[in-house]
Length: 180
Image 1 (cartoon, rainbow, N blue to C red):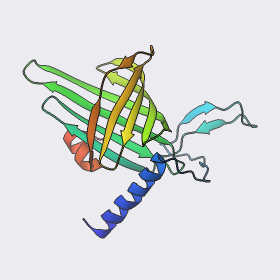
Image 2: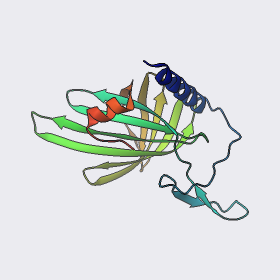
Image 3: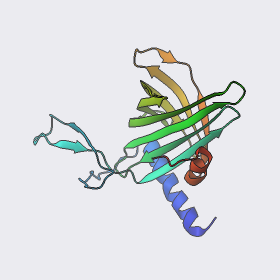
């Protein structure tokens, strides 16, 4: 690994570590006009009642799971402001039964909890079906694990998924597409 790649990974590790252990920053998001900035909601508590903007994500950590029946990847995005979001995506493939399905979960509004856990609002699209859930993920520099999920009706869903740390380029190569 080159010195610049090591330095970049170290900076990313520090950023993730800070984000996961609730480090705070006095930085405030600046309004940007690039394509990565989207309006979120109007905050009625603010004096000017202006539209709040989502910060542009600056760093990413990627995780990959490959098995005989599925390939999935998670890209965790962190912003300088501490905002967390990401995409969990993949495909299920059972060659014997001829079953194949693709899925994409958008993770937003990440809230840090204890022990490097983050709770996300999750919207999953599976073959045209949209599902809204709340997901709890646990992160380390080696792995990401889905440790809890609750459906829109409040019922717990019994899924546990573990993905290993991966280079983002290798993850995208394994999936066969770019992950936002």
